[in-house]
Length: 614
Image 1 (cartoon, rainbow, N blue to C red):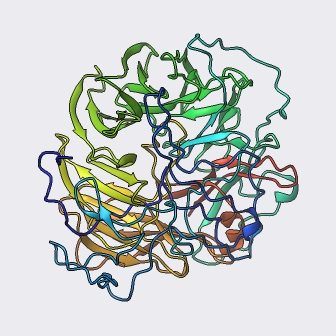
Image 2 (cartoon, helix red, strand yellow):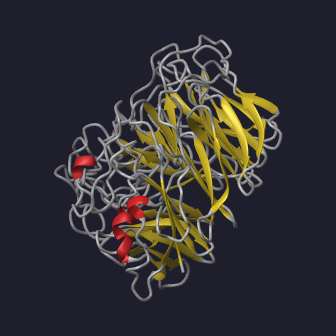
Image 3 (cartoon, helix red, strand yellow):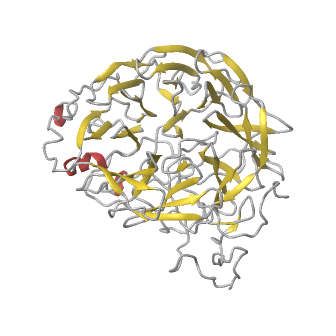
C-alpha cells in the first residue's frame, strides 16, 4: 500500500515501543508482595477482523474470561512475572545482527535477529518489536510487577475498561428497538456507604487501629482511608477517580461517593443508581462528570442511562438515554468521551454527541464511505479524534484516523493506516500520539501525527515499555492510558523489568529519539503520573515493608535525579500494596490511590480509596 503523504521511506529502524497500556497492555501483574494465586489470567491478544455483517472488526484485546474475579492476594509473597512477549536482547544498547547476519538499516542500527519474533515493518515502514502479549510470543520475556492500573481477573461478564472505567458487556441484542429504562428486582446485596471518621483510622471494625501510629520521621501521613461498599459475589466495577480542589470523588458498583480531600469526611451524600454503573467520563468538563448505568439486569440490558453530576456539590443535573444506532450498533456497551462542552457517547459502530451542559443531542458520527464504521473515540483540549474500521472482511481492510470538529462533528482530516495495523490506544490527543498493533506480525508501534493529520515521527528507542490502558470488546480503548505521559514535545514511558528497578525514558515527539532516561531510586518500579512545574511527577511503587513514594524528576538540563516529594509510611505498606486494580493521582501535594474493581469477597474488607499527604 502506498504510504500516507509525508511519510519517511520504509525500512528504517526503531519501531515505537508500545506500552502495555490501557487497552493493549502486557499481562496484568499483581501488586508487589502478593502471591500468584490471586493473579488474574493473562488477557488474550487482540483478535483478527470481525465476522462479515458487523461492518467493523471484532477484537478482544485483553478481556478477561467470564467468571468471578480472583480474591485479593495477601502480601509478603513475591508475584509471578509473566512475560510480555519481547525477545531478549543481547548486551549493549542495541541487538547485534542475528543468525542471518542482517545488515544495519538506514538509521545505522542493526535490525533484530530473524525468526518468528523479528521486528517487522510498521504502518510507516519502520521495523517493530512484538507487542506485549502477542500470540506466539516467547514466555518469560519481560514484565513489570509494578504496574499501577492492573486489570482485575476473570469477571462475571466480559468487561470493557477505558481509562480506569470498566464497562459490562452482556449478550443479546434489542434488534434495533429503543430500550426502555426500568428498575428490575436485583438480588445483589444492598449497597451501603462506607463509614469513616476521616482521621486515617479506617472505616471501623478491624480497621480501627490508627494508621499513622507507626509513622517514622519524615514519612507522610495517611490523610484518610476508605473501605469499599458491599458488592455482589461476582464482583463489581469501581470506575473513575476525580480530584478537585475540595473533593475526591469515586464511583463503586451502584453509587458515587465524595470525600473532602483534607480529611476524608463526606463532602456530600452518596448518589445511588437503580442499576450498576457501566461507564463514566474520565475527565470532568466544567467541574461535572457524566455517569452511565445499566437499564436493567437481563442479558438484553444496555448501558444507555446517562446522569450528569457536579463534582463539588453532588447535585444531579440532566438525565438522558442513549438510543441504539441501528442493527449491530447498540448501546449495550458505550464509551464516554469529553471535548470542551461536547460529550461523545461511542456505541459499537457509531457515536452520538450531547451538550454536556444541557444533555441536548448535537449530532451523530456514523458510517461513512462504503463500509467505514467508527469504532473508537478520544478527546481533550478541544480536540475530538475518531478511529474507524474500513473494509472488514475484504483484502483492503484497514483503519482510518479522523479529527472531528467537536461542536459540529465535521471531519477536519483523515489519515489512512497501513493495512494490517490497528489503532488500539491514544496516549495523548494534543499532540496526537497513537499506539498501533499488528496481530499477524506480533508487532506494535507508537506514532505521532501533526495537527493536520500527517505522520510526524515514530519512537525509535530499542526498549520494552509498559503502561496500563483499558481494553475493549467491541470498541477501541482509545483513552485513559496510565503510565504514558505527554508534555509539550516529549513522551515519557516506563520501561518493563521483571526484577529490580525500571527506568523512565523521555522521547522526543519531533524525532522519536531518546532524550534521556532515569532509573527508579529503589528496587521497585516507577510509573509517570503527570508533568508540572518543569518536572515529571512519578510514583515509585511500594515493597512489602516500605511505602511507596512520589518523586519529581527535572525534565530540563543535564541532571534528572528524582527528588522525593512524599514518602508514604512503611507501617501502611501492606495496605498500599494490596490495591489490586488501581488508579493513582497527584494533586495539590496529595497522593490518591483507589481501586477500580471490587471482588465482592465477604471475607475481606475491600479497599476503595486512600490518600497520603504531609
